[in-house]
Amino acid sequence: MTWQQIYDPFGNMFISTALAAIPVVVMLAALGFFHIKAHIAAGMGLVAALLVAIFAYGMPADMAGRAALFGGFTGLLPIGWIVLNIIFLHQLTEQNGSFAVLQDSLSGITEDRRIQLLLIAFCFGAFFEGAAGFGTPVAVTAAILIGLGFSPLAASGLSLIANTAPVAFGALGTPVITLAKVHGYDLMEVTAMIGRQLPFFSLLVPFWLIWAFAGRKGMMEIWPAILVTGVSFAVPQYLVSNFIGPELVDIIAAIVSMICLVAFLRVWKPKKVWTSPSLRGHDPSAAEAKPPQPVTRHSTQALVAAWTPWVILSVFVFVWGLPSVKTWLNGLFAPSFPMEGLHNMIEKMPPVVPTPHKETAVYSLNLLSATGTGILAAAIVGALVMKYNPVAIVRTFFKTLWLVKFSLLTIVLMLALGTLTRYSGTDTTLGLAFANTGVLYPFFGTLMGWLGVALTGSDTASNVLFGGMQKVAAEQLHLSPNLMGAANSSGGVMGKMIDAQSIVVASTATRWFNHEGDILRYVFFHSIALACLVGLYVTMQAYVWPFTLMVVH
Image (cartoon, rainbow, N blue to C red):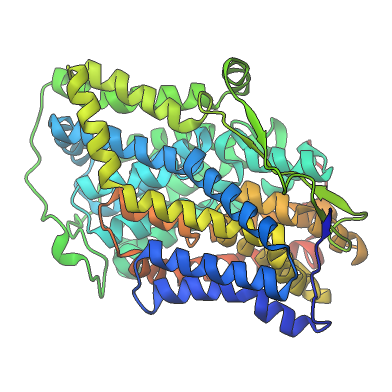
């Protein structure tokens, strides 16, 4: 028996929207205001979502339960699998002392904390976003920053802020490719449109990142380095997206930006070296920051040994992300399991789609091709290079599993919540509330993308969720469908820093357990402010700068 989604079950959009928002409000309030542990807050949000879906939206209880279970499996693979294995690699490098050598080598490039942020959180993070996505960049950069002595809140929050502008082209362009494939956009046109929106924010985010860390004065002291970082990322991002395609946008831009910043530091140094590892103003984790240590010089052999595991990681993650490699690995082992009682049993209805559309629910156990498996392989190879014996490798893996057990549980519960809202239609109700804003739609349609990522934790999932609605609404309002499809993805990147899954990844990478609420409170303003700026920019594109909508490739 097929169940059709209802987006206004009470015939009053205000009431329906308020009810649809309850699960999200419960989880965020529990995390951000009542300081409840993340896995408990996620459980509370899931219970609220089940109650709203069953009793307010009329979703059959067995379907609601299966949707939550389906989301939980997705939480374990691929998201939880990435977190577990990146922390495993970090543990290995810490235990044998090579991570300390890596920290010294980074400090040797610059002892200034602000420039370390540009190099690691923005440039290095963008490379991992482009190669893998799905939480990998935050896990890697937050772990490195905490190792360099940054306070847990600074390492967590700033890694999240930095991982914004590259997200739309993450995982070799997966969000954009999915948007075009699922909703019928022209891939090159929508890629080019995103490439005319995000470069401005790729220039802005490095300034915003350092302002958030060191304040306006601290930012202005190193503005030349920030400008070099932003421009050398934004220009390749525009050129590759408009003239080549979405797959290598972030990887090329990140490599160019890293090279330009390191080269610039050879001819320019800040007059004042910023050594504070804590956030300006109030930082509840300041006491846990490590004071700056004298930089220790190491031999070339020691430096090569320290960087080798991370070079191996970069190579494995890049190779694992290649479509041809994924296809080959999936051909070896990737069984699919339709979720009985859910697969093709729910219909998405107009006005979200032109005609009723059945929702699939097929879980792919693509263990071999999962990014986390590439990270695990890199960790094992790196461990052997570091001369670990097999027993020590296995022991460290299970030690890491125990360390992140509650983080994995939280990710499972949060993905269960996000998946349930998708299949019950409550997230679509929230999206429709944004869609009914008339002439202001370019602004609020962008915020719809922000909401989608905040709810699902994925720009790809947000594009699947709202990409069709953006197209329908744009055509009804005589706006460019490509503009609003791109706006969904560009606005979505700013929601990445407040999605629950990313916050859990950050708290786990920094070992700042049970402080997810502190991280959420810190990044929320930055997220909504940057999302609103993207919305204003898209509005200007729609009404003031129509020449930016022209196809140039």
